[in-house]
Length: 123
Image 1 (cartoon, rainbow, N blue to C red):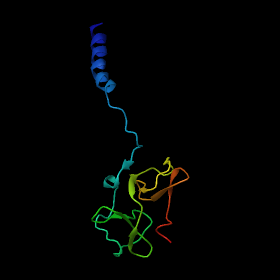
Image 2 (cartoon, helix red, strand yellow; image 1 turned 180 degrees about the vertical axis):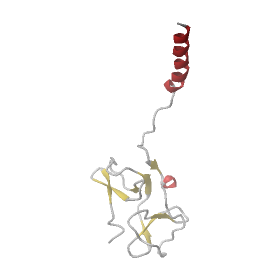
Image 3 (tube, one colour; image 1 turned 90 degrees about the vertical axis):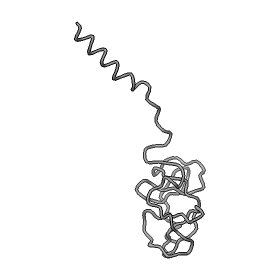
Image 4 (cartoon, one colour; image 1 turned 120 degrees about the vertical axis):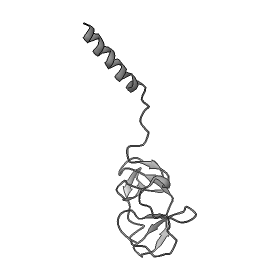
C-alpha cells in the first residue's frame, strides 16, 4: 500500500509542471513574423548590384532594411516587403507583402493562401 501511495505521489509531482505549461504559439512551426527571423537572407544586398539567381532563398535586405530579390537578370530588384516565413498554402487573407517557406520558396498571397510565386524572379 505504501509503495502504491509513493508511485501516485511521484506521478503527481511529474504531472504538475505539465498542467501549467504555456500554450502554443499562433503560427505553425517554422513560421515567423518579420524579415529578421527569415533564414538565409542576404543582408548585404544592394539595388541593381549583381547576384546569383536561383529558385530558393532569393530575398535580400539592403542597408535600410528594404526587401530586394535576386531576379533572373542577375541583379537585385525591388520587392514588396518580406513579412516573414509562412507555410505553403496557409491562409493569408489580403496580405500584400511576400514571404518565404522554411525551405526557401518565395511566396505571395494569391487567392487567400500563401502560394509559390516566381513571377517577380523570372519575368
